[in-house]
Amino acid sequence: MFVDEVRIMAQAGDGGNGCVSFRREKYEAFGGPNGGDGGKGGDVILEGTNNENNLVKYRYQPHWKGKRGEHGRGSDQMGRAGADAVLLVPLGTVVTDHSTGQLVAEILEVGQRVRLLKGGNGGWGNAKFKSSVNRAPRQSNPGEAGERGEFKLVLKSIADVGLVGYPNAGKSTLTNMITNARPKMAAYPFTTLHPGIGVIEYPDRYQRLQMADIPGIIEGASENRGLGHRFLRHIERCFVLALLVDMSGIDGRMPWDDYAQLLAELGAYDRSLLEKPRIVLANKMDEEVSVENLAEFGRRHDCVTQPISCLTGEGLDEFKEVLWEKVTEAKDRAKEAEIANSESANDDSESL
Figure 1 (cartoon, rainbow, N blue to C red):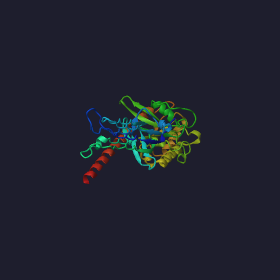
Figure 2 (figure 1 turned 120 degrees about the vertical axis):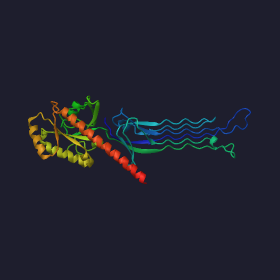
Figure 3 (figure 1 turned 90 degrees about the vertical axis):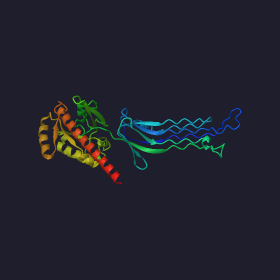
Figure 4 (figure 1 turned 30 degrees about the vertical axis):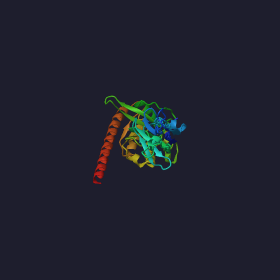
């Protein structure tokens, strides 16, 4: 079961109460206060991991709570701090406050930890209240209550390339051939029911790229036809989009119409997707009709296409090389933009 959107209720642990105690020893009539402080309550922490690929665990376990801190004890013994509740989430998880919709955190790296809720501080024992005018205080503080909240977790997969196309265009077959992923393949639509991430290896460069394969997009997806738009969030972070078009004209659909409709559905979801670099893959070029359709496609759409055949493997090596160049260029531009933004922010802070 693949789950990429959940709602959780979390509460940090309460702090332990402070202790009222006095030192009692032989020949010590007035030993003085020795009540210890309560322990701090456990935090609720998010941590990024590669061992999770979706949020299904939080669908069935939506309530999370940090442990309460122990109460203080006599002999100046402080209570033990409560254990943190650590929520392991896949990379690309976006956390928002459910009531306000405000962004709380984004988990993008393995080991990245974000404190979602803070545990309550422990209360003071009576030893903290001792003073020159109050030698035997009989007061202590209760522990503070831990923070609590309700949050929405949304997974947006992190990949270099996003693979988009109509159902039965050959996305799963292509993923099987050039990556280490093994999605289901069958001769009926919507065999891919949830996004999958595959790794494209480049042994000569000792490098790799990650490709996200999402379920097929059809006309009217923005109106919730087919599987709708809910999986397009998984290509928002991609540097390059690969649009796979079936050049054989399956079921009477023409490839140029499929391509135009794919662009329309991407734009209906988020206009920024249309600004990403994209590669148009002309699939099923092993069929005779595909050659004629590719020529007509070129007359109707002014874009560079990469002819391939997932059946024979034609053009796949060339596609991998073009993909590497496109992704490298996109990453360089993103890095330059990030540097320019940081320099602009520094200049603004210095002017203030």
